[in-house]
Image 1 (cartoon, rainbow, N blue to C red):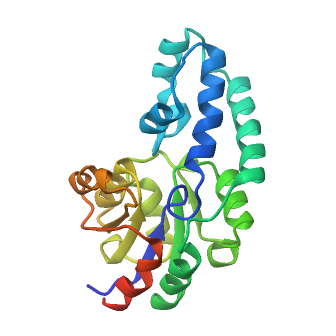
Image 2: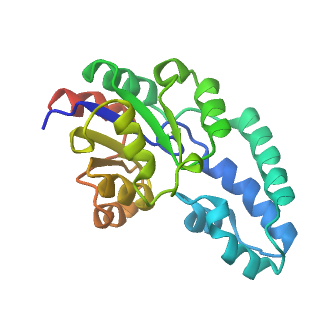
Image 3: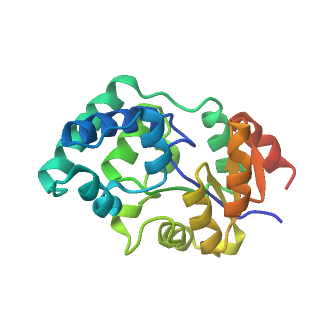
Length: 219
């Protein structure tokens, strides 16, 4: 099928932010009484909005998840990302190829808050491709794994979701893309994650973002 639009997730697809964000989150949760490793934190939280896990966080810490706590998390997270964030290798070429292949019909559809997404895209030099076409799950009725953010992006691009290609890296994100009716390809640099992404509904896996231009050229 010839794709008319490409919708990119952000964290883990365009920017290597997950270890940074989850390291900050792990530290704050430990301060609040829930101890785990960064790897355990990533396994639990990747693809999810922190606020959506309020019940689990409150049960594990024995404290309410207050707005003050969330703002402290955002502030620490943003400082760490500003200092250490890097682009996913091959992402610039992948985005440029998708931009060219679809006649500029690309968007970034993330489960993260808008400030974070825009700050990260600007920091790694990708904002020019996505300006005006950034969608945050925080602004939707439901966040991933619901399809809302992908449906909003497809509607903005005036493209049926069934003609969109979604690029994701997490099972929750894959489920969201499939639920929207899109075709989902999963960026999967770790082979052991492949089965889970396939089970979530990814129709194709690729291990290097630099592969995407060639994959699109074959469509």
